[in-house]
Image (cartoon, rainbow, N blue to C red; front, side, top):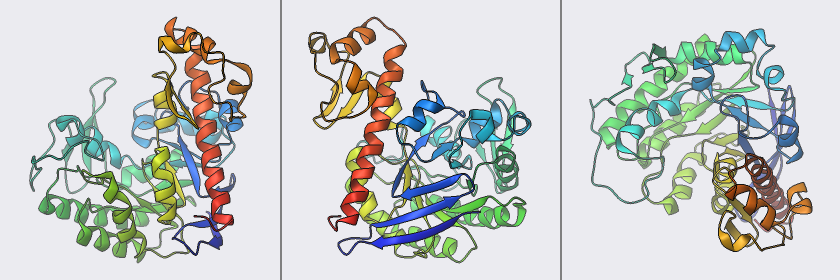
Length: 378
């Protein structure tokens, strides 16, 4: 199990400093959570990930179920030993893939719309390649095409075999273009599945309850109130956030206002640098995002001067480090010129170097935000 303690509450916002104690160590919160989808952080070794200051990782239940399979991981000693990660670890429930491989794939949308849309998903509609039932979700493996079924019981069984410190209840993450009627019916399923997860869990892992409800205030509050009454160790805030990122903090506020402040709150899949002060000020304790490594593999570095597309010709003659203010080993040992050359030569090495820098930069930024809370500035 886990233990969460609040060390300081901000007088300016809902931000708070805390300690999240797990069987594999203590996390200082607020904390950025690295994404280890398939039991690895892409292009990095676990020693490198540790060296970036990463305290906590989240792995993907759906993808690990497909390959290598939870039985292989369990026989390998559980995820921690299997992937050589000796620090705290989460696994999601597979609920996000209900959206990403379903309506998200069908309509080409993410959790936040890039522009407003009049398109609607209405009650009774089904995605093309995913079938959502009252008992769970039918998928097809992207590896060999075989049929898969994951419901709340299956999700608990898979996550228990994977063995992370913190696991999440199985839910449906709805699309940002789902209407109120569709979202309400989906929410009712998620709430039923939450009870099944609690009843079927046999391990001592900490189970978080995921709040859904889409962009609708009444449904978000209903979900937060429902989850708050159940014996979850903490809460996940999931789902979509409409078509305007400026509304995201308002939507988080709806939820946080209804949740027991003594339990930790995790925001699922959101964590651009510009989001961090806002979501931390909203009372979020941990949050995960693929951004640092996703952008690194496309040649983009995050710096105190903004994003740099290092593969551009202009950087070939630039002898400065990625960020003169950064203390990571990449900035201490390599120039923009060298990294630009490697990218343009289609080498593999720069993907690791940029991933390391970005992860280090994200963790250093959150550490600075923790200091801001300590000083009363956030």
